[in-house]
Length: 127
Image 1 (cartoon, one colour):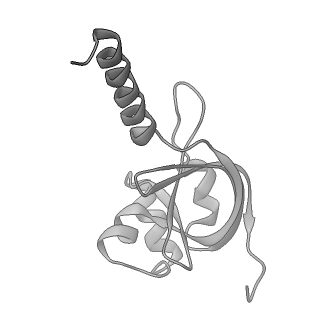
Image 2 (cartoon, one colour; image 1 turned 180 degrees about the horizontal axis):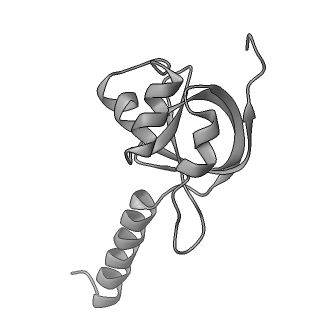
């Protein structure tokens, strides 16, 4: 027969494992390179790069969040770590439809990638 203490300890251990599995991974700093495009096109059209700068700008101004799509197909959602959080579209709008190099803290959760941008600039031509 299992003691009450052993049963409670086992339950707590299982609960901690569930929280550890479900929680996002700790952030780490990365530098990525990719195209800035609207999230709807990145997901629904399977694009490898934006159709055009004008299209990305129009979608962003209509409310679609801008994302960064890397060459290997990973989509990074730029987020704010402030409370309350703020949209990052204004910061990304000058780069809409263009290739960028961005660095900052990345957070991953169940296959999703979010990036708190510390630095962003246009990628060098030909890169």
